[in-house]
Amino acid sequence: MLEIKHLTKVYNDGTVAVRDVSFNVQDGEFLVIIGLSGAGKSTLLRCINRLIEPTEGQIIWDGVDITAADPVQLRQIRRKIGMIFQHFNLVKRSSVLTNVLAGRLGYVNPWLSSLHRFPAADVEMAKQALERMGISDQAHKRADELSGGQQQRVGIARALVQEPRMVLADEPVASLDPVLAHSILGDLERLNREEKITVFCSLHYLDLVQRYATRVIGMRDARIVYRGTREEIRRMTDSEFKDIYGEEAQRVGDGLEGTIGG
Image 1 (cartoon, helix red, strand yellow):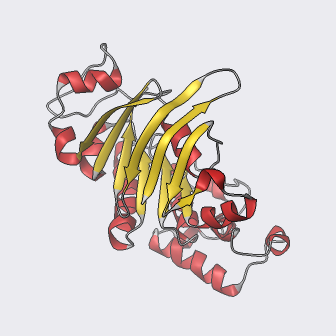
Image 2 (cartoon, helix red, strand yellow):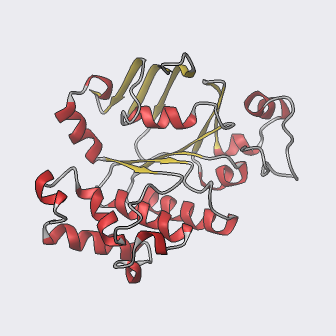
């Protein structure tokens, strides 16, 4: 279980991105965090694996305090936490296979990896991950030759070869069209269901949340203002909606899909 306890992040310019946030993530959940841009979603996600250093609070995973981990411990912890980014974070000029193998960096000798030398077993694992994502035929292309959806699948394959127990997905479909968005989230859902990988994902669009989340938290102005299950978010009241998205926000259609992400 992941436990977030009174987490706060204040940037050097005084901006409070996360303020006294506490919640738990159960093993095997598909937890989605929603809210407007600037609500604190990305900062919260990146604090969990300390890509951003928290200012106060604790992040405890299976009894281990990530916030207190030294560099050696943090390297070991990060092995089991995959990260998927909105803009893919691939090395554009490198091959797809090389980008996937970057997910094994926490396991191999840094000097050998700098020479792009990986054990044969790791190369085979990377190929299998690409096969699983349906893009094995793209393995030797440059990453920037791929479409956006293909690049995001490379990002998922890179996370997969870490053999993660948890995946943090920071707006993984924000730059994709609706059909690709469902396809990518379907890939994550399958890993969540079949591999029992915990997924903690930030999203803008509530129609996607309704379809994929097992539980939801909503943020506004650096605080948690909503907690609910998939069923509860389908019954979200106008008042709850405006608590997250503000008084000017409009619900679109009969459901909760719309353009409230920003």
